[in-house]
Image (tube, rainbow, N blue to C red; front, side, top):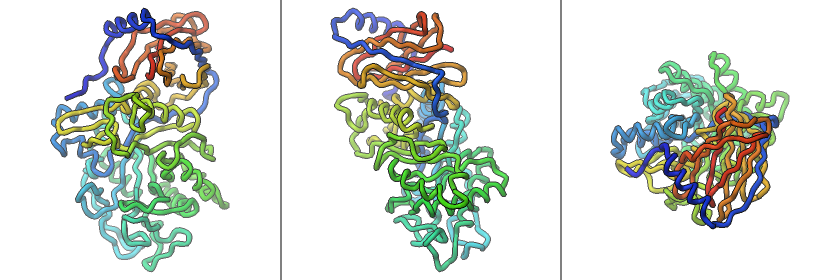
Length: 478
């Protein structure tokens, strides 16, 4: 096992800091200003998915021993031990088989018509996602986002869960079998009901994934008007069923793609946007660098390095797409510039030697990537209910974001993207003298390591050195 959990490194890092402070390495002075009184969006959390049977990887599908299964669960969801992720994105299956990595549908076969009585099946397993949700909730999960990639094939224009196709009955997409919009809404609500009856709450529900992309795997095409058709029916169905659940839409393949759907969601005498809680998009075709055209909360619900290059222990080498610094920057930009309330990677942990997961499970080993630790620098200290607050830097390559938690703790993240150490002078307006500040460091040599604590001086100011090509989170004690 290659992993050593975060530990008290006071003596080691005190020695390191003394060495760094006494070294002749050149440095740059940067001024950081944080203003808690100027607040922006509320934070819902951070997380990932374990869809397409990736949950089974955690539970030993490829030989991971039980002790390391617990380790992975703790790394992902335990706030004290690991990253403390608070959002899990489930895949609502649409397959009538579990071969390969397919996800079983709760309605594997057509009832014959949209109005015929459906035959639902519930196995209390859901491709490993149900027991994972139980374990995640036990460790502090707060949000379970159930998201369908596709309706079952018999509800679609192409009679196939794969290769695109539209939901029968949405605008301009009739089918000889009739309109299946209401039947699809019933199907989604039944999924929620199975979870609720089994003791696990689904908090958010979605019905599309990358609707501009006709993938060879499960997926379904839609424009904004067609998505609106489903939202109105789904909202009514949820209300009639008596569930307290929020609707998400539409998980566009890129931020621009999601923006292109907004007009359809906002159109008409009964705009579907009024029934949504959260607008969701991905980062593949275009990154979340600007706010979407909505006053609803926005989440970045999927993004990953899918190039195949394996960079498990590199925080920074050359700015590669899988490096930790790259993903720390993605998160910071999404939260700061796009105003997102949540940020989810594609897969949390899987048996793989690619960058599609934050944690690689290699046989019986657990190997957190530097991407994982970059996420943890945010998720561990920026908890649900926090608000982003005003923060600025005097240097364009030393970037900053800051959040005030409900308990009053302020978490400020500095990314030093220079190849020299920087001396930072931080001033937190409204914080008095004597407040303890806890710094945590991630770079090529450290994984969320606790550094020697600091204390604020007059006016809430403190000074620190941030190593080259690193990330430091400064967390106040109150």
